[in-house]
Image (cartoon, rainbow, N blue to C red; front, side, top):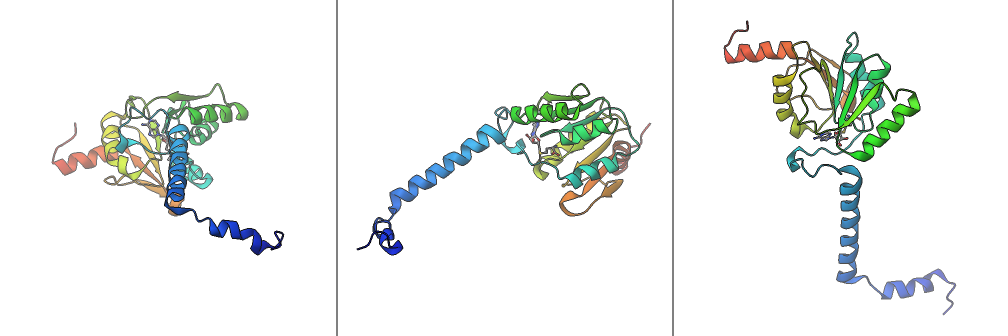
Length: 215
Ligand SMILES: C[S@@+](CC[C@H](N)C(=O)[O-])C[C@H]1O[C@@H](n2cnc3c(N)ncnc32)[C@H](O)[C@@H]1O
């Protein structure tokens, strides 16, 4: 046998099959690596958030950011991104004059990355990234809110936004619309699509549906 022949080199491998135990070890190793990735980098800081409210990180596309800002055109004042990730929406909002521009985020790696991007762009002093659970912060003074979260949490978020936001607030949702709300405008298509909601209009609609009148 010539060990330099490729076929001959494969013989020991062919003879030594992995077997059930080997496969189990590979599966366990892969599962553990995936768990470390999930717990260590994607979802650290989420221990106190109920499982059904945990939303993993997925950055908005450049077109999505552009569509969000397009729907906010002509507005000013405070802007808050709920679950701000690497801060791309907050930073763009700051560039376009929103003050203060605030991001709430639980993942400490993403908060550091966001701070680095803000520093690199020369906006360190103008943006605020806070390590806060978006379900626990008060939104009473936020006139501009941006959201890119999972569809499963949007029904609950609808309630929070409707009960806390000021009357003149505009909410812009990226990629997934709020299930029960009627938007006043949309921008973009497919995964980059964004929806704008006027809180005053939504409250009027809600009152009309429940047969009440607003004073
Ligand atoms: C789909 S990503 C969107 C990131 C960013 N807004 C963007 O558009 O690029 C959702 C983000 O929300 C954060 N997040 C999820 N639940 C949160 C919570 N309860 N409080 C604060 N941040 C949260 C996640 O860590 C993740 O970075």
